[in-house]
Length: 352
Length: 125
Figure 1 (tube, rainbow over the protein chains, first blue to last red):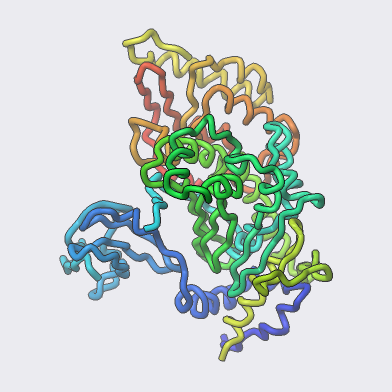
Figure 2 (cartoon, each protein chain N blue to C red):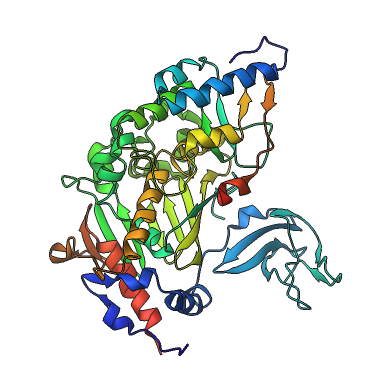
C-alpha cells in the first residue's frame, strides 16, 4: 500500500469535516504519529503514585506505559516493554515496586525510568466503539444535552438542562490549541447561589464552605458561586466540574473512556458526594454518559456508511464573537469548541 | 432483601431474588422489580478495587433506594437512549450486567459477594 498522506486541508473545512477522518486506519496511524506520540497528552495525575515505588499502568496512544514515583520522589514514565524481546514487563494495573522484572527472561528494570486536586477514587473503563474524535468533539458540545440527557434532567428536575438551552447566557469558548470550554459562570453568577453548580447548598457541606472561606477570604463567595470548569484539553483530557475523563484511542473505530471523580485534599465531606454523583453519571451504567456513548457509537456506524461524505460543523459560525481575551466565543449551544478542535487538528496533521 | 442484624445474608435468599428479577425484566415489569427493593438495600456493582467499602471509590453502579427509582424512572421516560429503544449495539445493558456480578451491601456492615467482580468484564462485554 502506498503511503500517500491524505489531503487534510481538503478534508477539514471551517464548517464541515469529512467522514473518512473517523474511519480510515491510515488516518488513525497518522494521528498516532502526529498527535499521540508527538504533542502533549494527558497520561496520569501525580496523586495516583503517592509513595516512592508506587506505580500505575497507563496508555499513551497504543503504547503501554508505567507511571512510577521513584525513590527520588520524581514521577517517571516508562515504556512497558522489555528491551530484549518486547514482552510486557508489568502485568499488574497498579502496585508498589522498586523494579520491574520481565517474566520471559528475567530482564529487570529500575522504576525511575499540587494543587489540591487528587485522583485517588479509581477509574472506570468504558469501551466505546467509536473514533476518539467523536468524544473529544462532544465534550464541550452544549447542543446535545437537552436531547441526549433530557430523560435524566426531567426525572431529577435538574437545572443543568437550562444551562445548555438557547436561553442560556453561558458561552462556548475556543481556548486555542484545540482546547475548549463551556463557560457556565454567567448563569451561575446570575443565580448567585453558592454551591448551586454542585446541586447543593452551603448548609449541606459546611466544612468545605468554611475551609474555602478560611483559604480564600473575600473571594470565597464568588468561587463557590461560579463553580468548577467544564473544559476539554486537547487531545484526551476532559474535566467536567467534578469528573475527569481520559480518552484512549484503540483504533479508528474504537476507544476507551476512563472516568473518575475529582477529589480534593482534606475535603472528605465533598469527596464522598463527588464520588457518589460521578458514579451515578459516568461509565457504562451511568445515567448521563451511557447515553453519550450510545450517540458516539451511532455516529460511528453512520460515518462508516461513507455517504454522504461530510459532517456538519456550522452551528453558530455566523454569530461568533471575540471576547476580551481575544478568544472566539459562541452561545451555549454553538459548535465553537468543535471548530477549535478541528482547526488545531489540521495544523498538526498538515504540518510538514 | 434484608438480613437479620448480625447474620450474613442467606445465599439461597439471594438466588430467589435473582431469579424473579430476570423474569420480570424480560416482561419489562419494572414496577414489580422495583418492589423487590427494601428501603435500606444498596445496589452495588464494583469496578474492582476495594471490596469492603463502596462509598469512597468509583463503582459501575452504587445506588441507594432513591437512585434505583431514579434509574427506573429514567428508563420509563422512553428517552434513555442507551436502553430505549433497545440498542442493537452490543453494549451490556445494566440490568443484564447486574446479574453478572452483584454485591449487596447491608447497613450492618455485612457484605455478600455473589461473583468475583472484574473490571475487565466490562471492557470485553
